[in-house]
Image 1: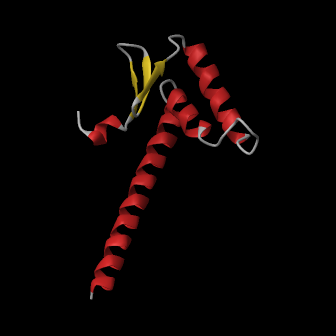
Image 2: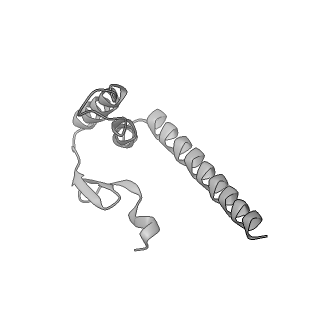
Length: 103
């Protein structure tokens, strides 16, 4: 498996685990459990300015909720596409800056 694929976030239905890059954790089998965990992560992420909680919890909660809800799945996919485009533009900008400095 390539390093690019190893960073993907996915839910393995066969093993019942949530894979976050190199980290793997058990995933609730019941829909109610998944919704409770996902909603708790999103709610905790909204309080990310407090100690212990963090804004990292929002995307993780959306990954968990996207397993059951199409709306959360669409938000997660759109955010991923926007971040990928932003990263591409940044890399192009950096390369252009390096080419200008080389002259």
